[in-house]
Structure formats: structure tokens, C-alpha cells
Length: 293
Image (cartoon, rainbow, N blue to C red):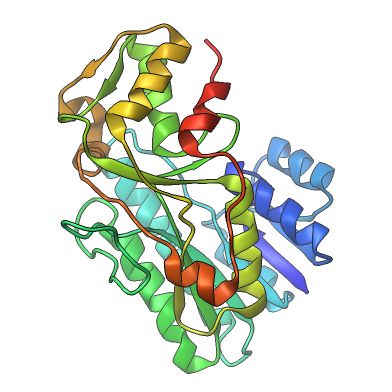
């Protein structure tokens, strides 16, 4: 299958590209910078130059592909306005990719986060939240899934709060970055809130499975660890960086504060049964032992 991928040079995307190539697919990656072009080519992918705002480039990439995987996001969490711009930019890009595939029965695999459900682990059947700082992403994903009735084999892989590899990535990676800058391995609230996690290499397998065989309009959970307490995550970060571990105000985490303080475990039972996905890589707490001071 000829696969067009956005976000193919990030922590998750590079793992997905490697998984697709190993499985015998060919890959064309969207790449905005010279560095991204070099990384994509070194991995064995063809390259189309452009970013998420280059809608004509996205349209052409989707037209020429047998399937599309969308992973790119600005990842600018510096302010509410910056986050809102990133959400809007992604929404327009995903709409362009989806509309291009209407009537083709080709797969479109997009990405979202696992939802929060009070009092229990969320499942694949639970709806995505429409409010909050990233509610716009949920609306974009739902629009893509609705294209199932318009000849698009759309599916969504829902990612947990941390997708990690060698101690890097996700919300745990953000906690590590903040700890390095602040000198404290901090966590909001009492730290009992739980974050689910998965290794990037396990995630890549699920993206491939969704591309190859997920039914139209379906959602899947890339969850290996249902939920680690944030204070346990911070404890490993603090020990590896030789920093004190303690609670800090929610406001310290900017627009992500309300998300960071929420208890949000998630399960993947249906995904494992229906798609035969079985994560085998190290857990988050084990993988964080790769952090270097």
C-alpha cells in the first residue's frame, strides 16, 4: 500500500514509518523543514515538502496514496492562543485529507486522545470530549469518522497521555522538560490522578493494523498501561534528574493544567481483541529509567 503520512518524523511518526516499511508498505512523508526531509529520507520514505497549512500539498498527497495516516500537530502549548491556533490548523488539514478521499473507500487513520470518564477507565465506546482546550481536535476527529458514510474507511487511534520511547515523549516528557527548567520534579494536585501510557513502537503496530483492517468509523485505544499515578511518574523523573519531588500549583502548567490534574485512566480491551494488538515494549515507569541527568 502507498501510504501518505503527516507527522512522520516525530517520536510517534518515525516509529510508524519504520513499522509500515518493515511490513512492506511504501511511505511518502510530509516534511516542512530540511531536517525533517533528511530524517524521512534516511528512514527510507519518499518526501513531499510542506506543512499542515499547505492544503494543496495535502490534497495531492492524499490523491496519490492508497491510504493516509495523519499524525501532525503543532505541539505549541505555550499559551491558550497558540494551542487554539494549532487545533484550528489541524482541523483544516484533516478536513482536506478526508474530503479528498470521499468515495474512494481508502483508509484514513487519524489520531486523538483517550477520553476522561469520571470514576473508571475509558473505553473505545466512550465519546471524545467536545469542550476544554483541545475540544476542537475531538470535533475534527468526529468529522473524519463521519466520512465512513461517504466512502472513506476512516478510523481513529486514541493515544494515551504519554507515548514514550527511551524516556522521552508525551505528558511525562513535558514533566521532565519542566523539571529541568524549574529545578523541581513537580506534579499538580495530590498526584494520585492517573495517566495511561504506551510505548511508541507498540503504538506504531496499532496504526499499521488500523490502516490495514480497521472498519470504517471505528475508534481504537493505544493503551498499554491503564494509568500510572502522576506522583509516581514525577518520582522517577526526580530520582533520575537528582531533583526534589513535590506538588506545584496547577497554574504552573499553563493551558495544560486542567488536563494534567484530571484522573484519566483508559483501557484497550476491545482493541486487543478485535485487532489482535498486544503491546510488548517496556512500561512507562520502566522506560523513564532511560532519562539522563
